Image (cartoon, rainbow, N blue to C red):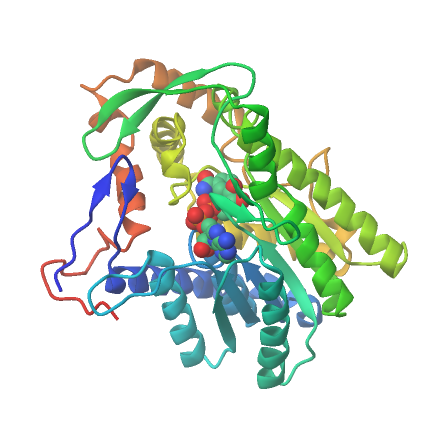
Length: 417
Ligand SMILES: NC(=O)c1ccc[n+]([C@@H]2O[C@H](COP(=O)([O-])OP(=O)(O)OC[C@H]3O[C@@H](n4cnc5c(N)ncnc54)[C@H](O)[C@@H]3O)[C@@H](O)[C@H]2O)c1
């Protein structure tokens, strides 16, 4: 079938199997190159302290996909990934994550790496039990102990069914305590649209915290600790975003920010639990990593973000500072979590004053922020294509669905399965 992108309101409802696979292949090549190029300092990073078994919750797209690829192809780790994706059928393409997962498993097998992928609801109790069985099986296959060194928590979900109550909660992206009006871009036309979001109700705030907050991360860590599945120096990392003040009304101070605040609460609680269960000397550690704003399926629908990101990318590319998901995660692993010092002692992990890992440091640099803001002030529909990187935004968005990938003939038939 010839597959062309079907996009409305910055949402793409289909994907290209060959394109998705090619993007995964490119990320793998980048990881391998970075780890080989820097093999001298890799030698300083003692192999016994590198992750051998990684669990990635939300592994199929965006930051989770990059986290899995970097663990597998950078450190040679056994990876267990789980995500919720729609498989392809004879007549309908699957979601991009379905094809990405398939490609990761294929290239891992070719490289002699053990990988196992589960398609299930991360929030459900039975998923946790199923994952624990999958970790044991994968470890046995690889001939290593079923001890997880790294747990990445990278979910972006609109809904969560609470496993205790059976109630389904729905998240909302809304401001709190007043409405928000901000510019956004229709990336297909370049039209600048004013998006308005009404103030969230208390129920909407609480529901968003239920879905995107830290409760489920804590349940995961409890389930793994109860089964003694965490290695003595296991790390677990959940991702967040802070961003510039101009987005705070809708992000940091809005419903999603309330959920991210709860993720930070959970991080402290998980670390307290590690100490209580394993003694104060424990090397198990939970971290929040603040990542850069990027174009993923989740971020394209947040008002102001497409406009801000199009200007930010222009500034960062001009300065040679631009990074995508895979560049961010390679930096997270090599320059934060697994530096020779931090790998041995988690207390040596570079963090900010609040204990968070910052890989949004380049985005938040003073000069980058000042120039991005100044650029945003000058943008109209007349100069948007020439003066911002809306083309880069659109390209990354299409690529996240397997479209616009170099070297692929989009007029040729592509097999759906
Ligand atoms: N995109 C950004 O700009 C950005 C910046 C900083 C931090 N983050 C954070 O990174 C994390 C990942 O975001 P992303 O942009 O990579 O999102 P994404 O949409 O690309 O990925 C979300 C993942 O969650 C999985 N998922 C969703 N619901 C699930 C469920 N019920 N069960 C199992 N899997 C489920 C999806 O299958 C997918 O693998 C989020 O916490 C987000 O806030 C994103």
